[in-house]
Figure 1 (tube, rainbow, N blue to C red):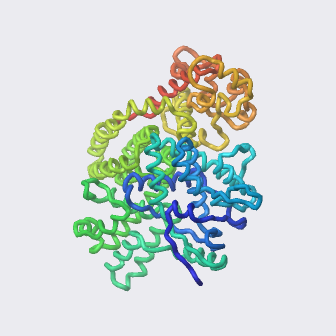
Figure 2: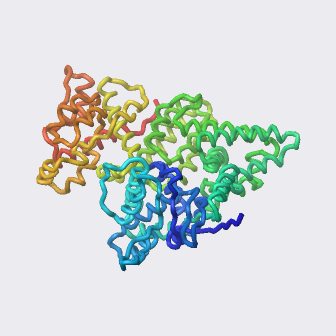
Length: 600
């Protein structure tokens, strides 16, 4: 079998090659979460090591001719990278120099026999229903979004998400083009080229069956195996397999877990004095004499493996929103709904794993508030990891105290660390929240935010204080309703544009103040109508957050429902002033809902 392995960066791959995704391939199935994970990983590397290369794996192709390749494995990543270049093209459309750099990576102009220049696209999708979506996106041609489904819709969703991701993460053209330069030149993959499809499929099966190369997790395993007698190999192999099975079953990255395990359980200090160990530093860290003593894996290798097992089981549970007993935990579940690919908080929970239940619950509640503030203010990952890994050491010390001292230590930690951290973001949080709109965050986070606000209102109405899961507010049958419709009838848009105040319809329809939760059957009927026509439908909603748009309910004199009414607003008409007022109302509610508390 004549096989070639070629290292390519994004620039060389799309500038010089044409990729064909055959119709027998699985269609584009990546969701917003998959796209976010890839670009969060790239973004982290860009922030932390902008001069280093970032490897995103390998792709397997069958060579058609010198420049054309049929893709056997890797089309999800290739398509996503292509869509990212399309997003850059849209965002930099007013800069001719950058457009001239990007366009040749999307399509080449070829002269046909009739003398016309026609585009030849660098990525061609041959599966049914998606053949022209890439071309339309790359040339920014119009198409009916409502008609899209399946892979075409997934592709458009990924493209739209990438436009928002790049626009929100980079302030101004200079930052944006720096990231484009990094993506083009530093993001690499290995292209495995074979002369036939059968050879390519064989390579693909081999890679997926055996994995590629050794990473620090493999090296750590080999290091521990060297500490035991050969007769104990089978037992150690079985114990190590439990660790890997748990990670693989739950689709958790082994190296991410290993980093958090080390930072949560041992004293760590890198060359800059930070309590951080990077993936490429793990093996060197664990083989240093001082850390050999800390981990004690030479003297007690089985105990060390058991400790990893205990931590990996808790890590998986915490990531899934479960407590130590495997039961759904309100605050951990909320964090799961909010965090997405954000996972740095897990190092804190691993460090606090031995807290008494009441104290662990209290910590989790405050961490949810902290993460919410971080996400709203778009705090950089690099900044977060430095802080959280350092805080983990403080929590580890607190966990070694007796119960009463633990309580005092935790209150002190919340008061002096978390509360101060959130206070430092007070102005930034207000500015971000007051400008918050539908396109600022992923839909699952938006659902979480509206769900928490709706839940708070319901609990205040009923006089409930016990925390509950958010499922009732975030399930699929509950939809995010645009009070000003996303696709309005023409008369509505014209009428709104005539109202006083700055801003146009497109700006106001995506503001948080224009959004609420609504049951799907009601939302279908509400459709694209004027507010006055929707009001009777909103009154049928089970959510007071939505019902209160049209009227406030009054019961007795000093009832809980009358008290919550003091925090709500109803509206006779729905114009720019109403949306701004409701956005402010939601901000005031948010300050109460996501507030730091000290344990009595």
